[in-house]
Amino acid sequence: MGMGPWNAPGPGFFPVLIGSILCLLAVAFLIQSTYGQERVPKKVTFWKEKTSWKKVTYSLLALIFYLFVLNDLGFITTTFLFLFFVFRFVGKKRWPSSFLVAILASAITFLVFKTALEVPLPKGIFKIG
Amino acid sequence: MLDSLSGLLFGFKITFQPENLFFCFAGCFVGTLIGVLPGIGPSGALAILLPATFYLSPSTAVIMLAGIYYGAMYGGSTTSILINIPGEAASVVTCLDGYQMARQGRAGPALGIAAIGSFIAGTSGVIGLMFLAPPLANFALKFSSPEYAAIIICGLILVSYLGSGSILKAFIMGALGLLLGTIGSDPIDRLDRFTFGSFYLLEGLGLIPIIMGLFGISEILINLEEEEFRGILQEKIKNLFPNVRDWIASTWPILRGTLIGFFVGIIPGGNTIISATMSYAVEKRVSKHPEKFGTGAIEGVAGPESANNSSITGSFIPLLSLGIPTNAVMALLLASLMIHGVSPGPLLISQHPEIFWSVIASMYIGNLMLLALNLPLIGLWVKLLKVPYAYLFPFIFLFCLLGTYSLRNTVFDIGVMILFGLVGYLMRKFAYEPAPFILAFILGPMFEEHFRRSLIMSYGSFTVFFVRPISLVFMLAAILLLLSSLVPWMKRKKGAFDP
Picture 1 (cartoon, rainbow over the protein chains, first blue to last red):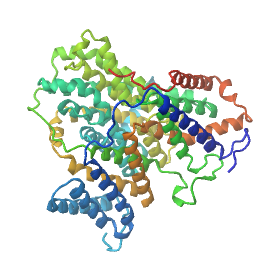
Picture 2: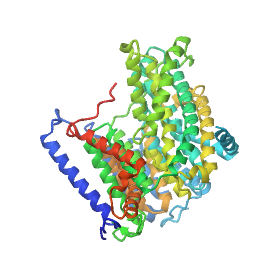
Picture 3: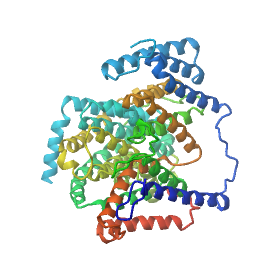
Picture 4: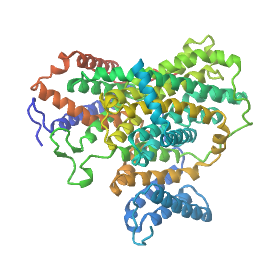
């Protein structure tokens, strides 16, 4: 992946250029953080609330779960599980309402996307859809 | 002049087709919804809805997406005024005086003047767009690669410069965006770069999953940290009509706001937030009673609300006449047009007049629809605010997941989205701006192509950028901006727009 001569820059030219600029900026940033005036004056709290990390982490886990399971379990099942998990554990709603809303939402979105928008959705091993 | 009018009539003919009218309304409706509901803004929503526009014609797609964008500006003021929570970023300024007005029982006039100001600004902005874009496109026909390269680099520096945090961080974001933009095929020789043999990376990282992650998922993650809040809505909103004194007080702010917003919107990096903030600052400075700002001065609502609307039409100008997007939403529209096989550039207006003129016509109609949606129907939106966020956000997640999947029927894109959701979340935590990143990501390949082509044209001489007059102007501007950001040795934080 050559950089090429100046009159015909090759594919490597731009990445190297940007990479170098980035290195320079990083050094500048380092210098600024260490010697600059704008040192953080007070303690900055990372999480807004004590329990914030739970909701964020659970949500991320649910999303990652969706990503890995979608092709295996199919759209409706995965969506149902995802929604149920999120409603129950992140939204903290009760079991019955989470269950109900998750089922309804999965079914409705499936119908809408399949019939109205004609989007192909994965079927998975349960062969629903 | 006559050309423009005949073009406009042509546009109306297309826009009045039932399909386009429907999607224009749909866009405005969804836009208002997005604006009213805190927790998702126009960028994220547009990214989610973009896949749904695949089966529409390019004009219809842009009509709807544009409607969502300016619709959100109308809706955003509602929550700012009623519960002191901005529905989307640009409405932050409206909270300052709008909420105070609501507490004094004057929510009605505040909402009314916000809608009316938005309408005046939006419509005036479209007039400006209509008359400025075609001549600019004509002028741009003289452009060749050096000019484009110079404009883009100037634009990227401007975007970083106008950000609200540390300029250095913005530059870093820009550089990262440029770097990630190199993934995929190189623009001139078409050789793979950084694809690691993955089939899915051949075309580079998808813009849409990245934006959905950066603006959709990360927004939700940030919001999840708050405890559940309940809106505090007091009495019924009576009397939406501002009285005569309000009108007189608001006239100049609306006019000034319209102009400020429009011109700020044209420049790269100028977005709705900056327009609104500038308008507020200007109003406060020219007012005979600046101390009233913050206690319920209607000028503080009229100006910013107008500015944020006209800045949207302003930002369409570089996209439609040069093919260069100036903010994340315009980048999405660019992507949408390219997906539909239209390549934006100076030839867009002449080769696809049906797109340009129907979008313009739809903006006139859209602003009218929004006036109707936001004045008499305001009760509807108020009721909607009572839905707790805990019921909403799982669906936003779901739409993001579905939308991303529907792009290429692969979970790879979902993975990209989630990754950038996390990245976006961390970025917000550590105060890094997403805008320079996104713009650099999409403008990078364009810049590289033009830059390398310029060097090929000039046989390796860099003077090509400085010898040609147009490109010289932009290069000088870029250098000036760079130098002035170095002057306080990057210790400066941009606080220039604090009201």
